[in-house]
Length: 404
Image (tube, rainbow, N blue to C red):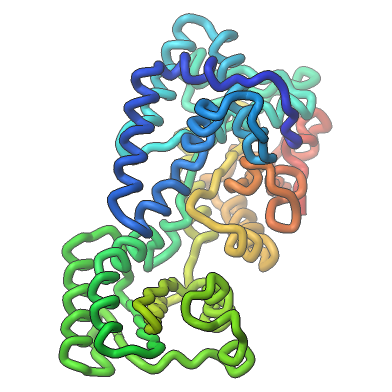
């Protein structure tokens, strides 16, 4: 499924497999939670982009304009309907249970859509695909067969947050907490300000620590101090002074939607940024962890943890990794800087990788049909294990040959 073709609208069929009442309840839950806060709400809508797309298509109807990303979501939804129809009763029960589990609490449809897309991608390369996880309750998800050669595929999702000390979700929560305080402060201190936060101990979903940091920032502003620091954080408040070429540009004036790209150029791709405005006043928050992000390292660690339990070792194994919670800039840098390749090849030298013939990596950019340079050209990155006995087996080549 490297290219997503348009065809009949599969939305109603997909929702019927999920259950219309369950689907409606989930959509109401997402809508309610997204409306409860500004930045966290936007992050929640992005997290549930697949569900939101399906619901939008459900409400709009098949005749409404369709985007390339819509086509990909619809193609995978259609794949889900076809898979459901082709499974045995036991397999169908497991499949529908997986769909139901994807619609509760913090879960999303991403893992099961990644699995379905992986299956379709391998089928397009000439493999027969058996859904062993559903049909046989196997530890791996897919059994590929081509020219008499078999391979197991274990699909897994790893969050880029696992490689960050400052989590993007936690940052959104903190900024929503403090936004009203910043607006009030700006009303009494009109101007352009920058609060730089260095967080050596990181920032996660720990609400107690978030509340403590919020209180420190609020107290710092109320007492008119320009700096505060301890082992947990370093805070410094200064006038906002972008680089001269940016500061003189109309794009950096308060209220402009183009301010964030200017800030990103100034502070780098790993910085966590937020802008609050009140009247003519502007307050920028820029946070960094105490060390560089290690997203690729987190992916390697996840592969080392799952390979011994997900793959049987009796056939060549493929780990199909989906990297969640990343954006197009970070994803491209992970590829261009060869960080993913370096950590994947590092993993393939470990004992845990003895049964792994190849590793593949994909993100939402590939899942939703984006093209190069932001997405991998072949729909995924592939790294072959040259030491595996089946590495040079011709029948497996379309699934295991390195893509870079």
